[in-house]
Image 1 (tube, helix red, strand yellow):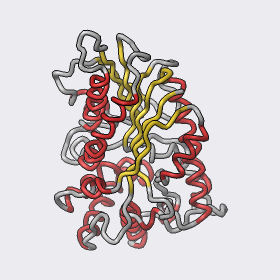
Image 2 (cartoon, helix red, strand yellow; image 1 turned 45 degrees about the vertical axis):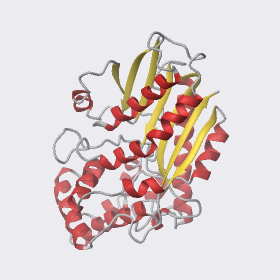
Image 3 (cartoon, helix red, strand yellow; image 1 turned 180 degrees about the vertical axis):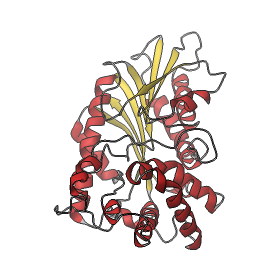
Length: 362
C-alpha cells in the first residue's frame, strides 16, 4: 500500500461539481438538489419573515451570501426565496426596501463562468463571486445580513488521516465511506466533522451582523441509525463495489482503492444541535428534521437520469484520485452495474433526513 502518499490524499482539496452546461454537467443534473430547495422553501420564508428584525438590521444595502453555491439555477432559487422572505418582513414597502447584494461562494475551481452566464437576465440585484473554502473567513466583519448553505456542509474539508492509515485503529478497510458500523472509523469522521463545523460557525459569526441569520440545510441520519442502513449508504456501497470490481479485473491498483474515502459525513440532528449549542455564538431560531418530503426528492424519471446525477456529483473525486484515464471507464461500469442490479434509491433502506436550521448571530 502506498503509505507515503496517504498524507497527501487527506490534505484539504476542493470538491467541485462537473462544470459547463452540457448533458453530463451539474447544471443539468441537479434536480435532486432542487427538490431540497422546494421542500424547504415554505419553512425558510416563514422562519426568516418571523425571525428577522428589519428595524435592527436597517441598511440601504442588504447582503446575502450563499456558501457552497456550485453551478446552475438552484442557488438562484434559494436566494430568491430569501429575498422574498426579507421583502415580506419589510411588508412590501418599496419606499424603504433595500438594494440587495448577493454573493456566490464556492471553491476557486468552481465553474463560476457557467454560473454567471445562467443568471436570470432581469435580476435587479448586484451579484459577485467569492472563491474560497467556507471553512474559513470570506467576508469582512459584520458585513453579511443573511447567510445560506444547502447540500454543502456534509462535505468535509478533508478525509481524516487515520481512516487511510493502515497502521491506525481507525483504518477504514473495505469501505469508501463512513458506514457508522466501525466505531473507530466513525469517531475519526465525527471528529473531522465537528472541527469543520466549529470552523464554519466561527467564520460566519465574524461575518454576520449582530442579529443576522444563517440558513443551513443539510443531509442527516436518524438518531441511532448507521449511514450504511440508509438510502444514501446503500448507494455508497454500490459505488464502492464498482471500484473493487475494477480492482479484481486489474484495471485499478488495489492500493489506490484502499486509500480512497469519500470526504462526507452525515450527522444526526441531535449531534448537530449539540455542536451549535457548544459553539455558543448563535441562538437556534428554527431546527427541524424533514423526512416525508425526502421521498419525493429521491425520485428521478429513469435509471439513466440518476446515473447522470451521480457522475455530475462525483466525477471530480474520481478524476482527482484515480486520474483522467479512469473516469469514463469507471462511470461506464457504474452505469452497467446500476442497471444490472436494478438499483433503486431508498429500497429496503431507512430514510435519510434533511436537517433545516435557522441561526441568529448573538
